[in-house]
Structure formats: structure tokens, C-alpha cells
Amino acid sequence: MKSKYYTTLAAIGIFACAAQADISNIYGGLSDTEAAEIKADAGNLDVVLNPNQTDTSAEAFFKGNGNTIGSLKTSGTPSNWNIAGGKTTIDINQAGSDEFEAFVNNGSMTWAEGTSLDIVNSEGNAATAYVDLGTLSLTSESYSEAHGLNFKTNANVVGTSFSAGLNGYETPAISVSNNSNVDYRVSESTFKNNAIISIEKGSTLNAYEKLNSDRFGINFIVDGTFNYKNSAIDLGKTKITGTFSAQYITFKSGSSKLSGNGVINAAGAIEVGGNSALEISDNASVKLTKETAAVKSRMIIKTTGTLIISAKNALSYEGGLADIFVSDAMDAKLTISADNKFNQLRFNRQDSNEKLTLTVNNGARVYFNSIEFQSYTTNTATLIIKNFAEYSIFFKDISGWDELESVTLSDTEGNTYTKDDLKWIKGNYDGVQGYWLSTVPEPAAYAAVFGALALAFAIYRRRK
Image 1: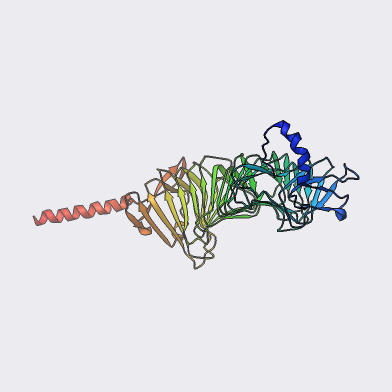
Image 2 (image 1 turned 90 degrees about the vertical axis):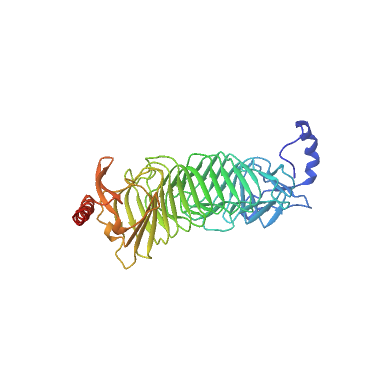
């Protein structure tokens, strides 16, 4: 095992001859039935794959068989390195904080289904594994749990191109675990047909270059942290219980879910298009921090989910207004800290007695076209309003207001009100006619109060 950095160029030639005795040279077969096994020879853990000795330009076939080696490199220029047959583990076995070459591919390499490469460090996580993928593709004709690149130690990953996924199967492509930090800088990556990227709790994957996908998007399982340093990313069916950060995020297909401590940080926008849906539940939250007008979104707040919006007009749907769905919500929360307009505030009211807490901060205004209910069952819908200020909540149509079984409101001064205490005042929101929610009594109520006071004063004077 060698550090990625050498002392001098002259030293390379000196060490090259001696190094031959310290490596295992493996020569490829001419077909999959003649594939050479990737394994160490006589304790020499640094393995070099070589072309077939009969035809050095032909495709060279190899297979994994559960062996552990120290490093893996390729030498020569066959038309393709074809790897199949199971798992190979590379253990860099290095203490300290240096970077060591673990895998270097100088050509075009293909892994068949069920083929995986585990990068580990039996000495801990301080050292970094250097991984150069070259041109690497993962193919799969069926689902195989043991598949893909599995980083179980810190790693610096580079390469020309990487692709994963085939034929619509959910295919593991990259995983990061064991409290590892992986920096991924492959020039071009394509994840197609439901390829899966997973990051376990305590681990981090930082992706710097563009991650491409087909119309299905990339499937993510994020229990740890994923940071996308490029611009826009398309997601398929995704589960986030950790933190997912990117500038622009589009959910392309399937039902995606945030749960546990799941957080999406979108510096630009989140789009949930087509038949997709993003469910926010179990204390998860979505944070939108910049204004956008080009987002298609259907946001579903479930159980104890939280949607936090601090950007003006952060959501839209097909060029219009987005819906906010409250579904199976025991304690859902919607917090608005900038002016935002929505289409419907819709309660599902099929599976539970649903409760939504709406908080409007920083003098913001929130607009809804209407309040709707998915079904009229015995289940109830409760709206709790916090931090209320006059002229902060507007509905174009208030016909659904009476269907709310319970409304409680607390204002910025700590006063509390029930549904019967609240009033609607006719007005407009940016030219749209509708109603502002208010705690101020209607003019008729004022007149009644003043009339009662006047009558009391007259009686008092008469007694005088």
C-alpha cells in the first residue's frame, strides 16, 4: 500500500522494480467462464489487474469471490475490464491522516449485477482512501442488495465518468457508512432507472459535480448528511431522516418521505411534479430560503411534520398556486415568515382527527384561495393559529371555514381566542377580493357595545 504522494519522480523508477515482488498480478480471462479471481497472492495485498495474456486488447474478465486485498489498480489497455461474481473488499489498513491509493482504474470498467466493492480501513477512519473510478459503469438485470460502491471509511473519489442502473430495477449504486466522510468529484455521473444512493447516520457524502438522472430521478436514502455542491438535482423515491442540502431539488417520480429528524435545505426551490408527492412527517421539516416562481409543488404535511417557509412565494404548482395538504396529522406545523400565496388548505380528514398549527412571523401575510376537506367523516379538523397579527391571514373563499370543528388563536400580545371570537373582514390581497381574519369585533358589535354603555350612563345620570 502506497501513499498517493511520492517523494520524487526519480524514485518511481527505483521503486517500480522492487514493487513487482510486492504485488499480485492477475491476468484476465477471455470470457465470463474463464474469469480470473481477484485475490491476493502469497500475502501480496496490492493487486494489479492485467489484460488477457493471449489477446491484450480484448475484453478482460475477472470475478470477485469475497476476498480482501490492500489496493486494486489496472495496468494495460484492454477494450474493457469486466468484473462480476460478488464482493471484493479493499482494506487500506492505514493509521494517521494521510491519503492512500485504494482503487485506480485507468480504462473502461463494467460491473455486473451482484458485484460490489467495499472500501474499508481496519485501522479506523482517520486516513483517506483515494479512489479513481476512471470510466466505470454498474449494470443490473435484477435487484441485488450486494451491489455498488460501498465506502466504509473516509474517501476522496475522482474519475472520468460513473453510471449505475439498468432496466428499471432499484439498484444500489453508492453507499456511505461507518461515520465516514466522502468527497465525490467524478466529472460526469449518471444514475438511471432508480439507482440508489444511501448515506447512513453519522456519515456524509459531498457531491461537487453534476449528478445526472433519467426521467425517474435518483433514489436517495439519507439517514446521515448529503450536500450537493452543484445546482439542480432530480430525485425519485426518496427517504430522508437526516439532512439533504441542495440549491434546486425536483422530485420526479414516486412518493418521497421525510421522517424522524429529516430536513431538506433548499437554497433555491423544491419542485414536486407530475404524480409525485413529498410527505413531511415525524418531526421532519422542509426549509425554503430563497424566492422562486418556477416551482411545481404538492406539499403533504403528515403526522408531526413541519413545513417552514422563509422565502417569498416559495411554492407554486404548474405556474399557479400550490396546495398545502394536511393528512393523518396529529400535530402538523406550517410556519410562514414571508408573504406566500397558496391555492387550497386541504384537510384529508379520513384517517385521524387532524390538527394543524399555523404560525405567521415577521409581519408576513399568507393567502389561501379556500379551505377544503378531502372527505366528510366523523374525524375532526383543528386549526391552531399562533403569533397572530391583524391583516396576516387572508382567504378568498371562506365557505369551508364553518367545517372546521375547532379553531384557537393566540396573538402577538398573548391574548387567546376561540373560533366564536374570530371575525372576517372584507378586503383584498394584492387586488384580489376576499376576507381577512380578525379578532376585532364587527362594527355592529361595536355599536351594540357603545349603545349598552350609553344606556348605562343615562341610567347612572338619572339616578344622580
